[in-house]
Image (cartoon, rainbow, N blue to C red; front, top):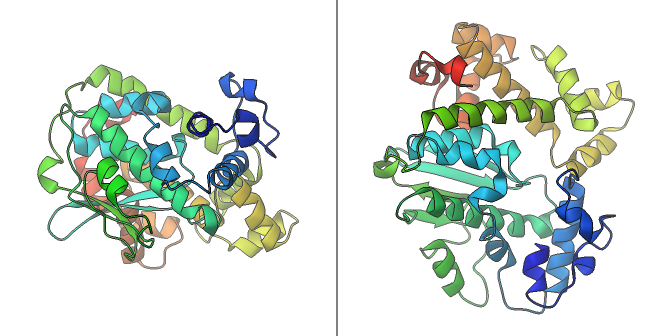
Length: 332
């Protein structure tokens, strides 16, 4: 973001205003930029470039290359097919620089729909972050595949820009639909099983193992989100609501929501993360029946669990388990 702003004469110091970050820290691999700081830089960027006719979310997203994401990028590029790359990408999406969410859904005609949102980002910044993620996803796709594929359809849950859609067409390859109910990238079913040219089973095994280790370490960190996860893990069969969690942490519900938002998450997101992680482990490792897993995770109806699982993984729990190879545990 600071490099993009620099192309228009905006200094790094201006971009970092109010974040507590110093320019030299951006090149220090031991420094972690928080969600609050990312939001602050984004807010500064939009304010400093407000007089310029452009779409900064799309433009910044073009700079999020595969190599930007480290080991997560290696896991994608070494996957056997587009389908498996998407599965790995979504499974470890928390390792990206996104502050939004991406989930998969299969359309009736077999096409894959990637639904994007940024529910925990302040509304004035939401379009920037969603458009940044859309452009970043398409940038990665072009770098993974031997020849770029155009998305079948892209829809935005935002109004059409006043200055036209020509730049959207240049960046996205299609003219998107605006004012849609949700932001969606539609991937043609016919390309889902195309092989990736840099597929390498050994590299993928190592990359996925490192992704899982990083994700486990990140989720186990201290902080408000870590404390909420710990509470949810101990009571997942009858998960407390956000206010009860806040009470257990000696704070108000409003304070809890603000602190989680500052860390780039929410109570609902954390509950979904804990349930998704446990569901995957219970399905593959413990081999428990779906009905038992649903009840262990606090679902009254098995159908509710199946719907939630399909939202997380794009397939139902039974389909997910049957699709895993015999060496699944060794791979992850």
